[in-house]
Image (cartoon, rainbow, N blue to C red; front, top):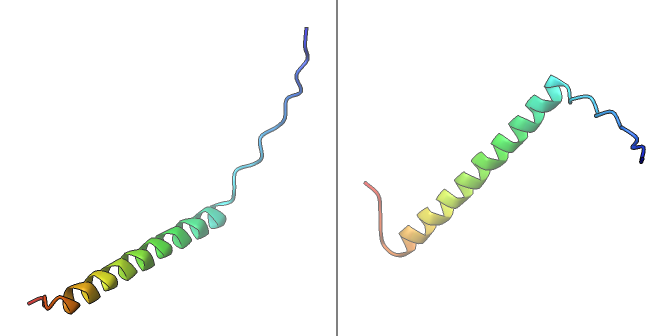
Length: 52
């Protein structure tokens, strides 16, 4: 019969740390979306398409 050692799980991260990660991920996604929108606008303007 084999004996397995059990390891205790690490304690969950604190709430400020979780909120910090959430804010970081949200900020990165907003910046990426803004960058993509800027590229699309630049591309459309080079083709002569202008919004109203």
